[in-house]
Image (cartoon, rainbow, N blue to C red; front, side, top):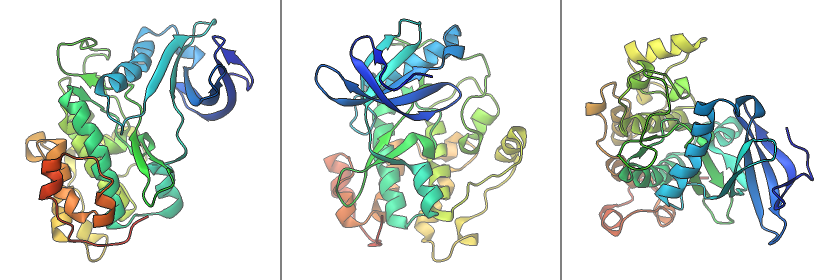
Length: 309
């Protein structure tokens, strides 16, 4: 851990700890020369000698910078402390994660759910267009930034275990063959099997799990152990939304259930296709904040004017 007041590389003065996990910790910091508030993320010292852990950590900076979408957290700088710990300097966000939002408020309104999903899908489309698959999409990695408007700005975080599918820089694998990575509740069946060749449709499955959780207040598959959850993802059918909540539009249930198909071929083909099917459920005044192409915007029509947020 680092101490508040510590100055990193003569530039970044740490203010306070924002959060910590098994792989790293994040601090609020101030750039000493220009006074800008930033977030500094450190890889924990226990992992600095692990080449794969360091590669995953730095992958976040390369992926985020390579995508260049305003819905993906901006990385300003990378470096290594005098003690040899890698760090990233990122934009500082004010607000809460989708996980925190759900924990505090329970399930969400239809329009709010669709709005958040469309914003995430816009960022995923940009990533997928660059051949980058997130692979760890979950509510903890979706941030609802308070920007003083009626709906939050949505930011996609943590590309640390992302996979670059093309032949550009960083295309080599940084995971063990067949390794299972990610958070079990949001894993696609192919991830649960440890399939080596994964494509962008694992992110669309995870988006389906998030939609299901936002609308019903629960994830599709529960379990007391990691392996039990994986087994259910592989073998059990998802309980329909209509069996858990009342008055769900059949069209919306169809979108969610399609995203949760066990075979990638039966899911949406692209993030844009999934987004197109969700846009009609975003309240019209909120749809103005959704990042989308003019062609997609002109084809969208709001038919569910429900309150949100």
